[in-house]
Length: 97
Image 1 (cartoon, rainbow, N blue to C red):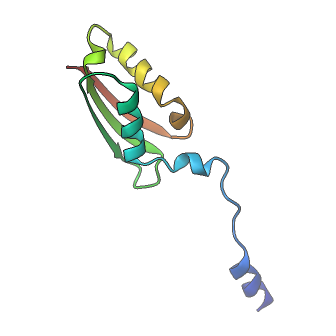
Image 2: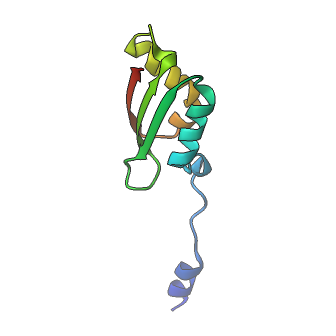
Image 3: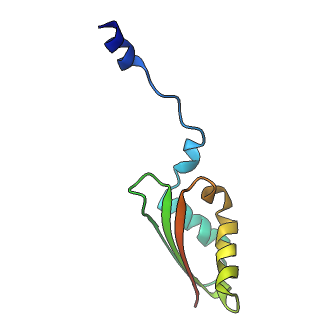
């Protein structure tokens, strides 16, 4: 009986960095839109089942004209550096308009 009471009142401490995992699709999209000038389209989808650790991101932008896919991806990774550090991964598709 005492064990049951103890277990009911016991809670896990917050996971380290948990607040950083609370990125929403909207937050990520807004950040990309703020940092990519000109004509652009940004789509962000949480593909982790809602836990915010894996995203599918698609960006089409004038800013990518004349840049290789690697350069385009480096731009996105640079913008989302803090967020990406807390994710398990992302699928990234970029294209010039």
